[in-house]
Image (cartoon, rainbow over all chains, first blue to last red; front, side, top):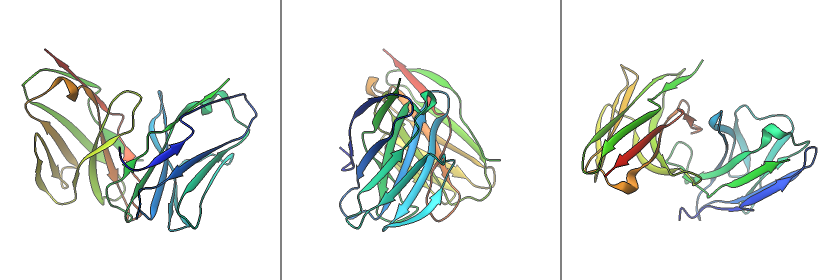
Length: 112
Length: 110
């Protein structure tokens, strides 16, 4: 158990819908990262927050957005969902930037 | 562009040693990480190299040569539970975002 929690574990939804994935970092960790893992793309970095501020963006689609709240938990919002958005979404946290990251168990999103 | 290459699959016998190579060509380099991932589970941190040389941690060791853009992960005394995907990842700036290779699937046979 890494200490990072993610909810829900599984999500099944239809195309065009919107979902919110939630992540609570390890106690004391200020940095939160979101990654997407699909069979054909591997693990891809989406976005990073540090102490409430956005720090870095990867190839995150405009339909996706995220935020980190004052209590340091983070949410990833995915809208206008497409079949290709089906993937495992991982959140990771680290005590500071550029330290080892600890991954949550992931949310498996299935878009039908 | 960014390129992180590692072999797709390796097979080894229980009790043996396996070396997983990773080569990278990235714009900038801040550090190299190795993660282990069992199917359908979260990646778990194994090692971190920022300076050239060998880092040893129990049965796992990781080596880095920054001038060659090369790293390897050495798994000794292989156990069946070591069957997993091993991911090489590079950070290229101080923000810490990880850029992953496609992973090497290690299959341990009895």
